[in-house]
Length: 534
Ligand code: SIN
Image (cartoon, rainbow, N blue to C red; front, side, top):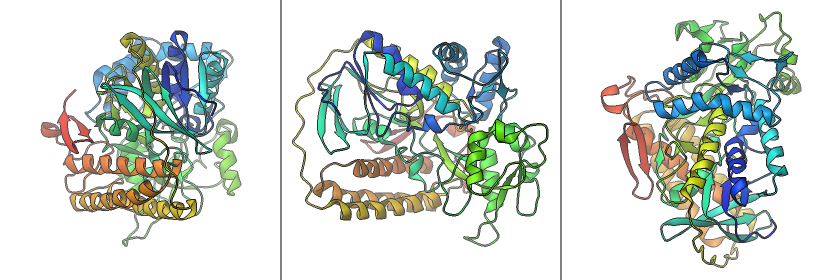
C-alpha cells in the first residue's frame, strides 16, 4: 500500500456497490477504494445468473415491483423496492454505455427467467458469469479515473470517530503495516458474511467485516435473522459449495430426491421456480434423511432439457462440473442448500445513510428492507448499482467537513508467534460454524438459538486472548467480524417468534403479521433488539 494519509472519500469494498459509488464520487474529490484482496475478489464476481431489470417499459417495472414484494414475504420496504425497479433500467443502460457486455442475439438483449419472476427479465453475460462482467466493466471505468485509487490486499481494522463524525479509518496492508487515513465520509460496501456458515457459495473474503466495523462504530443493524440459503449448491465431498445458478431452473431443471421424485410438487405449485426460501427448505427436508445425522442425496436434473446446448449456455458451471466428472446433459447433479446472501445488514435510509454521521453503506452489507424476508433472485447486482449510486449522491449532498482523525495508537507487537494464533482462530471458527449450521440454519427453534448464543459468547471470549497478545491481523479481524455477525443473527432470530421468508422457526411455524410485519433493528452497543415498521 502506498502511503495515503488523506482522501475525500473512503469506500470499503470493490464489488458492484462500492465501484458504482466511487464513480459517482470521483468527479468531486479523491476516492480511495479499499479491498481485502485483488479488486475482482468479491461476491459480485461470483454472481452467475444475472441482473434482474425491467427494460421493457412501465408494465414490466410494475411487475418487477410486484415480484420483489411477493418474494419478500410481506416485509419488503416498498419505497426501497420502488427505487430499485424505477431507477434500475437507467443504471443498467449507463452500465452498458460504460462497456458492460450482456449476452445478445443480434442487437437484442437475451433475458432468462429465475424463481419467482413472472416473466423473463434477467440479463446475463458470458452465459453464467454476469457478476464478473459487471465487475470488470466498473473496475475498468474506475481504473481510468484519475481521482480513484485502490488499496488492494488491505484490511480496515477500525473506523475513527471524532466529534460525532466518522473521520477516518485504520488500514492494515498485507505486510502488516498499519496506517491511518483521514476522510470526509466512509461508505461501507464490503458485502456479505456467508463464511459464518460452513457451507456457503461466497468466497473466503465474505466475512461480514463491513457490518462489524459499522456496528463497532455505533451503527444499527437490521433484519439480521434473514440469511438466504441458495437451494442448489454443488454437494460433493471435499469440494466447495459451488453455486449452480437459479438460471438452470429458469431453463427447465427439475429437482429430484433419491427416489427419483420431482418433490417440489409436494411443496409449492410454482414447483422449482417457487421463491428461493421455499425451494431451499424443500431441498433441506428431502436431504435430511430418515435418522438424525443421516443425509440423503438430492439432485438437480437437466437430462430432459432439449434444444439448448447447456455447455454453451452455462460455460462456467459446465467447466466446473467437468472437473468433477459431471455433465449437465448426462448426469443428475448432487445438490445441497448453502448460505448465499445476507438480506439484513447495516441499517440505512434510501440514500445509504446510517445512524452514524459520515458513515454510509450500500449493497449486501446494507439493509434498506428492500429484500424483506427473502430476496428475489438476481435483484442483488441491481441493488448494488442503484443504491451505490444513491449513496454516492447522498455523500456529496451532505457535504461533510473533514474532521481531525488524530493519530493512530502505535501497533502492538505480537507476543505470540503466528502459528499458534492461526490454530486458535481455526478452532474458534470451527466451533462457530458448527453452531451456526445447527442452530441458525434453515430451521431454527428457541432452545437451539439459545445454545447458539451461548456458544457465540464463548467464541467471543476466546477471541479476546489472541486479540490481546497479537498484533492486528486480517485473520483475527475476520474471526472477530464473523463472531459479531453470528451474534446479531442469533439474537435477531431468537426475537422473531414467527416464520417468514428465510427465517423458519420450527416452534413458531406460522407467519404472524399482527406482531411481526416489522423489521428487526439491533443496536449492538446496547445489545438491544426492537421491531419497527417501515
Ligand atoms: C444465481 O445465479 O442463482 C444467483 C442469483 C442470485 O443470487 O440472485
